[in-house]
Length: 116
Image (cartoon, rainbow, N blue to C red; front, top):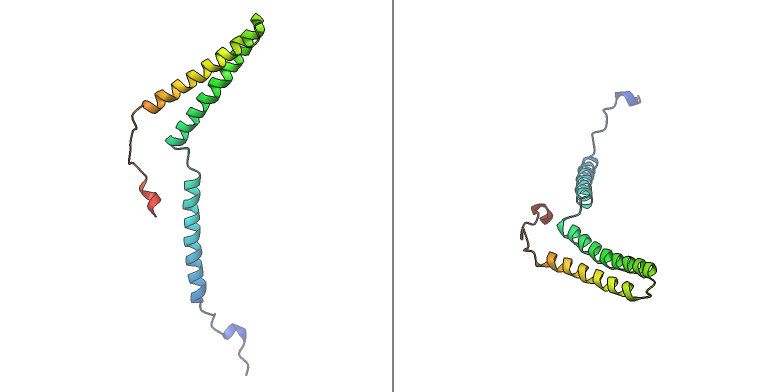
């Protein structure tokens, strides 16, 4: 007599499948943690760098535009353009110097979760 399929016991879960599921769950957790670290907002150093860059670009561009406007208004060719251009560079460098001369705050407060 042949044994029908309904009379057989169901096959037990394979150990390899459960091991694979555990490893898959661990890998997904690691990827979630990595995604959190990638999506963090800019830290203090990045904000400071952007601030310095904006002072440089703003000082040079602002001085150039103001000098050009005064030159076209008064009819002088490169006089105010050069004057305000270098004045804008000087103001930008002074602002950067003021930032650089401020005391450094919170040295050594690195995040502990980066040491995984």
